[in-house]
Length: 391
Image (cartoon, rainbow, N blue to C red; front, top):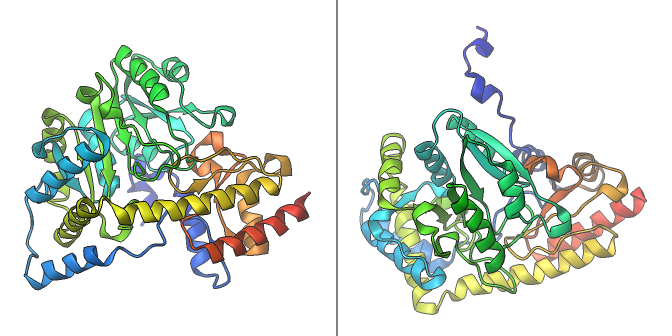
């Protein structure tokens, strides 16, 4: 049977993830050090795991409501208000299967076939495929390393056409670590309002900023009514495998998203929801001490990695958020893909080619510093040897 005739054109035209390709290679190489996957190396705190265990012991294994546990949505509401000055009622919040599902249902809820979505380039690998799967057209907006890969209102407005429906605002940014300051964000938001766009704000790294506090798009004056806010527990709470995220928006929008969610998902995993509830309750009692401790360790690693890369002669914008470095390898006369392939083959260190995140990343690679210092030191030593041999 010719399965090429069976598969849909949209799926066939979506390239496989560049991140997963290198991750798969590393799995078969026992000597490899992976700086590829954006996953905290911390174990989920015990009080969160314990709450999940107890929920199973008590037999809490049935479906929750489609929107998620009411108490969890209440805690998410309180958390967003206390940490980021964003006010959403529990019935404006849907608990999702990670932030990834939140991205998917947000796009499917607002897009008609052919609608365009502006996406800063470089940014997270899933945005453009998710737009395509929702019937839309992803429009990359090139961001420059000269200004730290920040989206500017001028670049945004140049990309707008009569078909533009929404813009993705992925800050702090994966892969660059870019953060927008309050004034920069307000300028972007003025352009969004001027052009009548919907802002899909992915704030999954909101707790992981260094030397500054995260400013939520929904907290900017005039933006709440046109913002879909996406976040989750994976990064800040070290809960990647639990697959619990959430999406917030005005009720008319979440009602539309809920129709998609209830038909294709039903509800997020019940055990994960109880774990997420424990994460927020424990965090509230300790002023999020576990989150702060992880952030401090990431910051230490960040400063180490950036210092090492610059000492090698690799230009690297200062990442102010998330847990990635995005150095340029252009001075080695290589693309990011060539660098990543040769580094893995010769030194057994895996990084991700920058063009996995968009064309603007062609001469860059992404390195995650969400791993222990001993492995980071060894990885930087191997990368230094490799770079020295390329000069």
